[in-house]
Length: 595
Ligand code: FEO
Ligand code: CA
Ligand code: CA
Ligand code: CA
Image (cartoon, rainbow, N blue to C red):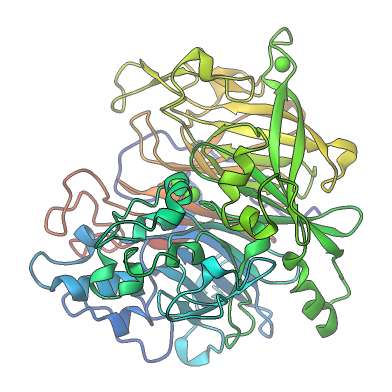
């Protein structure tokens, strides 16, 4: 749907050059405002942030650490309002706490409360495209979800013996969500959030439970965590072997009902969920695309049993809220058509793993497939990908775009296939240094998938690597055929979004070309297809999370995460002091708009 006036899709800008500045850099003619930062008040009663007097109780009401996913929904009552939902993936204790000021248990409790999600009401600012945080006393929806918040496990595996613990004999009531990375909005006005590296939160004071050796190993649950068992023994595998099975799910949060209990959807499988994005197939089924962010892991798809009700009534919304609990979970196989066409492309198949009533994997029950999804998928020979991150449907052309961020470990020709073709690539040790060849796919790909017959619920698709990322001077790079001398270098795509014109926006995490991470716009059709232009760089040491392009096309939200997270940096010796120059960095959400 075209939008009146200039929008993110039609903005003309001079690309931002690679740099190492400790700031958000946007093109001339644009402005970047910090909306909200770690420690700012979210819930009523939150004290003013004071880095020297942090408490777990304060952190549970303040904006959490390391903002990642960003979504902005319409405000239910205020036409000039919005509802911001963010994830808080993890914490950088070495940058959060003055050395020696807090005891170890207090640091852990504050860190636990600083994970999770935030819901924050916004209001439009005086300039077109600008936004502000709503005054706290005027809000009714603001909410913090953290390690102590109540969640409900739903779907076919809920209540399974493996999901029961000493504290929860039902296997349905879980406290907390953590390592929430990317996410997506549903057409019925909820937010999906991916529990990603949940494996890293469990320590073990004794031997691991032998029943779960294979499962723990496949998910990287080793008994080496963040020491949270010091303050809560459910994070001790020797005490509570089932707690890890209650994490690694897709969370659905209803931001319009501050009293609602967010749900963890077992039907969407358990993995290191980068995120989840929804589209409605032509037959009305809800389709969810998901990536499992691990080297050599898979891309998944869920198709609902029921159909989406677009009527907008309360009854329709209640029905829609149940759509993710029944359906079929599948995993992707990519077949190449050979390199004679000089393209990395081919066809693909969705291999079904389980429906809510039937397993399609021999030796696995429905609950086995949903709880040990990786082990089940291993049985059906899907394609091992280079860290599938965000995957999302372009609402204009209906194609699916997935960021495959990198895989340093795919470093022999025998390990390659047409969808994962590189076993070496060129990087730059620092800005301006010459390119050097390294083993592995270091700069990542952007994969484009086209459903067969344009049917997102069907079995087949076509695919191509639209971008082979890196410095355009590196011979292996490819930008959908666009002239290389006219594109910005791009490395390690992580999150994707679309503007109202259907251009792809890509944020990066882990640039190995010597520059800070950033945000890029890429047209996907016409003569400009593949023209990668850098729109922003984020502060030193940060990755660029978000992004979210407002549906009106006037604002681009981004979420610089972990500014200053560099080797050896401490609270006293930070490598970033963005955004407030207080002497230490604060992860923050930023809105960018035309001046
Ligand atoms: Fe948290 Fe896959 O990035
Ligand atoms: Ca080919
Ligand atoms: Ca990510
Ligand atoms: Ca990432």
